[in-house]
Length: 120
Length: 120
Image 1 (cartoon, rainbow over the protein chains, first blue to last red):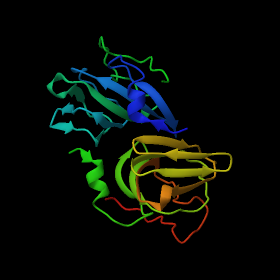
Image 2: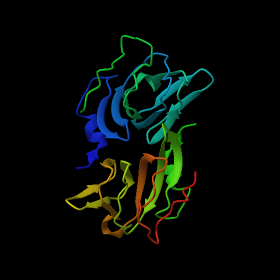
Image 3: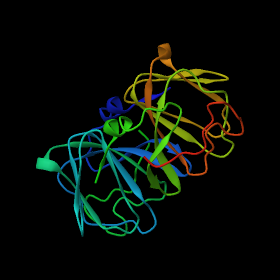
């Protein structure tokens, strides 16, 4: 059966707690509900795609800031430090595409760090 | 800059001619405009994700048929024969995630086969 993406965002409420909804070629497709900000981090070996389904995600990087609005996507290349946060502190529904072994906040440990990511 | 996905579908008109809009971890993100049907094929080593932004994609497989509507996604596992076609012969906007070396119609050659896929 196909996966209704918006409907699946409604199947959990925890924020900064990505849920896996698909697996292909060693990568996971994840859904995350975000609000506020995470923590500066990078992934040494993994590029990370963010695709927004609700709200506006702000990706602060050391040399620029990118806004990812509804229906938009952005790829943070491996090694690039980024701070994900949500615009106007409103909730964001974000789909992620990244290798299965990606750590949530890279080698940074933070109270929001969550590496126990489960299938939805 | 982030990529506005729907806007990017408007940047080309050719059908069955996927355009690359992103690259990560050895995979491409592609946009394709589809209408009618392609051809039965499979990808021996590549899983393939279809995410629909307009219309309804029908994925016929040998043991089942899956409809992928707007806002839905489906992963066809490697080795699974599939025939992509569009519902009611209407145009479908579809995003694909697949390894960079994926051949459009696997080892099948068809008049719609297009392995010269360019960046948008």
